[in-house]
Length: 257
Image 1 (cartoon, rainbow, N blue to C red):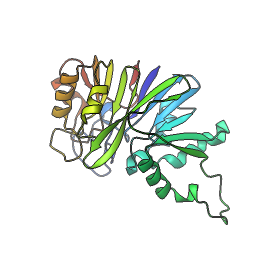
Image 2 (cartoon, one colour):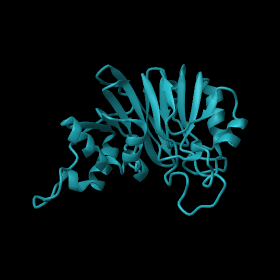
Image 3 (cartoon, rainbow, N blue to C red):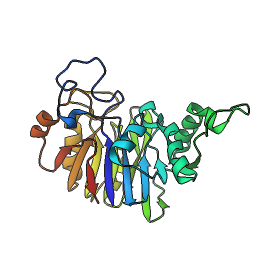
């Protein structure tokens, strides 16, 4: 399977409109970061999204996502869910309801934000609304999406609970600054860890790059990719400082696993 990074930027994306810093003005395409999300490509016609970022339409067109067979949600912050309405484009072409998976709290927030989908106005006369189903999951209780076994686990994003996912030898842990002990045990013996690392400066809900490095060095996955970076992180400059086996992700990165 292929794990593809669709976006690796923080909630604003990079560059920030109007910002004149060196990263926002950079010509290096690896410094252009859309909002963090990913896709698991199990085969040519079976794709599982992780989050529907604000940039979903752009990401799908740029990175060749032509099918969406399911969506895994990490949490309900705006940059991770606001592309949900763009799933209706896939409804048009696939003519299927798209199942979405998240904790009960995450799904409840999604229903609140997208009330017009789940409690439609009977007088609405516009185009087709997204056709999705909401399926609750629980941390540490694995489930299957066809041949893909998904292991959800708990992360903490400040006081907000976030869901990480382990699929085979790969684990995805975005938007976090703490890993509970039970989740820590699930992150051992990995081929690849995709881990939150916002910037070098401290933050109260995200790991810094140095904190993410320390976690990777303790867990010892074969490879670690850092995601959710802000515009204070220059790809080339930061890459030169990273230990062997740890890299910055970039939009479009493909990870076989």
